[in-house]
Image 1 (spheres, rainbow, N blue to C red):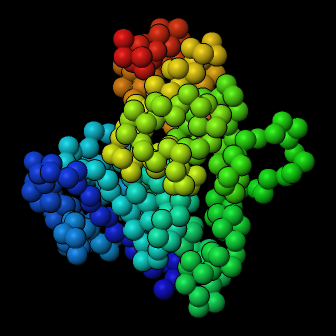
Image 2 (spheres, rainbow, N blue to C red; image 1 turned 90 degrees about the horizontal axis):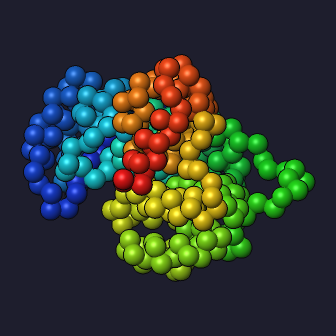
Length: 316
């Protein structure tokens, strides 16, 4: 196997007991598989699969199936898995993709399926160019998980002398890839569950109300908010919205300003996309573009947009 001949597959997980729409969706999968020169099958658990896909066709096929990023997916679909021949895969919903290496080691988060495929491709290429007949998981162990991850994602190793303000990674897990969280910061889907609890203890009861019984157990040291929500079949952005509304009120800081970049809006509050579209804002090529700039380009009133976003987030 080489990086040049890698193929991808899509595996569908349905919502348990939600049977409406499955037959129609599977018929569409069969038709779409032929159009993209893949083949349709059922796996050992009777999940529908399209295999034999080229890298450049994955995003197009998802769109053809009505599984576009931040779109409204068919009601029967729980998750979609993009798999490679290696133990590397991305598990996604309409609002993002978790990427795993090995059996269940979280590797990265991507908002769009094309980005998830690119990360999978880079990870496969890095391994295939350097392995000496050892399995991927053994290769990663020998290389060092963080070294492997940084090489694939292009991250620079953190300098122990580069920041006078101590970043918070928690005391119980060795995960310097976890984003720092300081008191007063908004919570992100990538933040570790116990990291959030130790900075904001009052979030524990909130998560428990959502049914996250993992709070406080050993699992929560290895799971981020996105993973915990996905494992419990919850809407991570509803949870983040409630958390950050509370923090906004507590620390008297707005959820959004004219300086908020589009990438933060997509990461934290993708439910606002419909509001931005209604106001005439166009998705920028550079996701670091701030909201204020987008309003100027669309000749939209910034305060009006901020007010509309606030009402949407607070469900007023």
